[in-house]
Structure formats: C-alpha cells, structure tokens
Image (cartoon, rainbow, N blue to C red; front, side, top):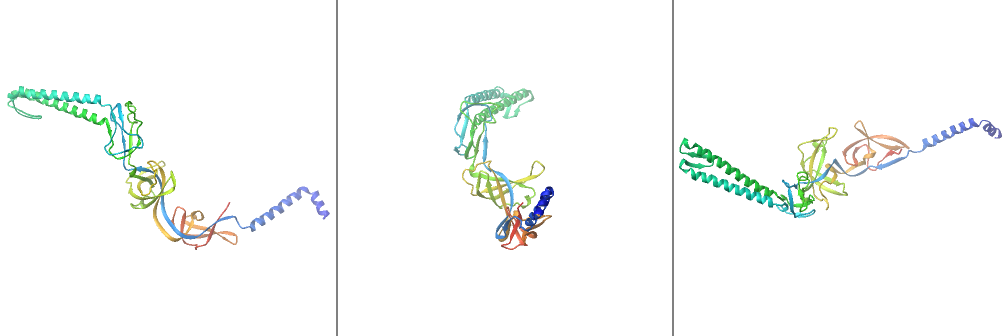
Length: 355
C-alpha cells in the first residue's frame, strides 16, 4: 500500500489525470443508468373544439360625429360627456343673430325683385299674351325687348329666392341635431363663447354612440376565410376583461379583403355579442375563437406533447427508462389539445424530456 501511495506521490500529474478519467467514467455510468428527467401528460377523454383564432375590436353599428358646417361663435351647448340623448335632439348652437339678419336681408331682396318683376308685367301688359316662368309669350316680334326684360327679371327673382333658401339652411345648420339616440362619448370640448375657425372646426366634434348596438369586428386570415359561415358560434375575450368569456355569433362576412404589411390579406367579420359585461365600450381590443366543430367524449392530449414532422404526428413514451417515439393519428385540433384517433389509449402517459 505504501508503494502505491509513493507512486502517486512521485507521479502527481499523472495521478491527477488518472483520477479525472476514473471520475468521468463513473459519472457517465451513473448518468447512463439514470432515467431521463421528463414531464408527463396523461391521455384523457373529454370535449375538444376546433377553432379559428383571430383578433379585432369592439365597434358600434350606430355612431355619429357631428360638427358645425360653418365658422362662428358658440351660443350654447346643451350636452356633456355621458349624457343620454334622443334622436333629433338639439345638442349645441352657434350665435344666430347674424344669420337671422342675413335671412331677413335675403327676404327683402327677394321681395324687391318680385315687385320689379310684377311691375314689369304691368308696365308692358299690352305686349304680353301670357307669362309662365321662362315661357313668356308676346304678341309680336316688336315686343322681343319685353320678353328679354321679363326673362332677366324672372332669373333675378329665382336667384333671390335661392338666396333666401340658402340663408334659411345656414340658420338651420347653425344648430347640431343628433340623428340617433345614444350616449355622448365625446363633447368636442365645446364651450359657450368659443369661436369656431377654419383651423379648429373639424376637431370640435360631438360623438354620439348607441351602446346598445355594440358588436365585435374580427379580422380573419385569408387562409381561414373559406371556413367562416354566418351563424357560427364565437367566444370573445377582451383585453380589458380577460376573465370574462363573451358569447357571440357571426352575423356578417366582409366582401372585401384588406391587405396588410407584408402582403397578407385579412377579411373583416362582424360578431354579435350576447352577454357583454357592463363597461364595454368601442375600440376595446380582444381575441376571438370561431368554433368550427365540437366533439365530446373523445381522446385528447395537450398540444405540447405532440410533435409534428412532415405532416406526421408522434409522441414520446418511456420504455425501460428510455424515451422512444410513437406515431399517432390526430383528428380535431383545438386551441390547447389534439384529438387522438389512434396510437394511444385512455390513461396512457406521454413524456417530454426536460433539458
């Protein structure tokens, strides 16, 4: 024994190398005989649903953005954010004093023009046989000057009448009227006394939304478009309500695709929501699962344990502490599980090697 220790002492470098080799061999043998570290899953029976996944946002069928068509000073604002309003309700108005005067001036001009026209008829009555707008009949060619004069007066009268109608429309347009019932979701920050100019006119809009007409619009990839049908059931999950599953139904399929960055095409579909929670508003983002097919009491397995290669599917199982691959045939593809048609039985365990 002393000779052995003496040899190791006299050959320190070789001894260290030899010990390292022996240790590596022992580690390899132990490691080889140990079963691999794996995570397991059990094949079970249950419900599986084939779906199409998409994303989109909440929209409203009835919404109106109302702006004044002309500049001017705001006289009054009768609504604020959150107010419930009725169809044809007045919301705000410009100062109409100038418009009233313009209308009155147009009416006076119209009356003066009409008087001139009628006086011309009286003055030249001896040469006129009939007057019917521009169809003016005179008794002879010598009275053509009368005809021209009457036609010009008729045109002036018609022009004055149009000025009255335009002034009346301007007065009507000075008041914002809602064409729908709903909720004021944006009051445009309108305040009495503010001046509307050409620069800020478009930004001063009152938005009315009928929250009872909310629906979800999802964008379907062109590869899935042919599988979408009216009436299909949909499960909606909004980003703002992640724990609430909203039931829906496909009510409309878009007739025109929208090209996205990269060249892909998506088609919008409308989905009616049947149990949306309180607080849902327009523009909320979310995801949808369009249900294509559903099966009950079928074999299913977590997707993460099924491997695909060249359109063939397989799973891993443990056999005498060794991981081996077994081919399987799948059916419906759900969001989390595959339907197992053959290759496994209920209760079988499959594994994934933990690296």
